[in-house]
Length: 99
Image 1 (cartoon, rainbow, N blue to C red):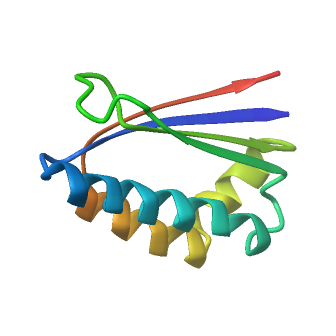
Image 2: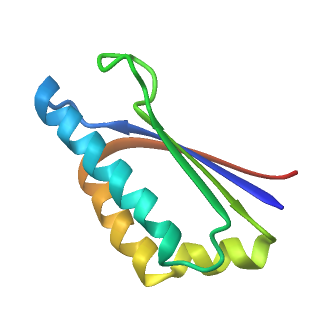
């Protein structure tokens, strides 16, 4: 199994707008579960500290193998969410590891 972990830091938005963007991005990511068969598990959490200097959102997802992760990366539904990521975020960090 592959664990795909991604952290996102949103752009500097006013608090109410930031929360709205976080909620939108979280929903979009979670909606991938029913759209991409290779995606075995997904969890998305937002930092409870809205003004944190660290990352704002964390994605955890599981795939059977590297080939499935590669399919996910180029899947049209995932690419749609990536457009939101590009629009809403300044920073992204990712780690993929076998478990």
